[in-house]
Length: 52
Image 1 (cartoon, rainbow, N blue to C red):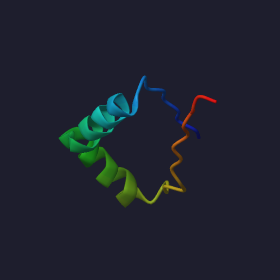
Image 2: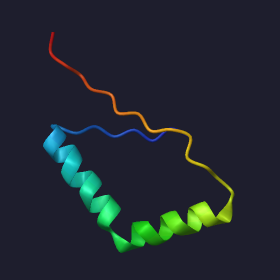
Image 3: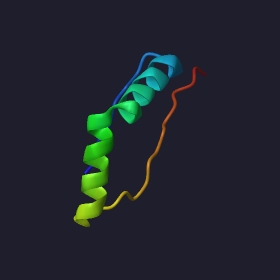
């Protein structure tokens, strides 16, 4: 499964990531998902587009 998002800037990306990881509901979901043993995190990639 692939989950992809786009952001207007690194600042916008950082605000989103900070909000997600500090959300108690996300934290609880993450703990449950890991404890279930039904899935595992393989990798995370951050792609950037730079003007040429």
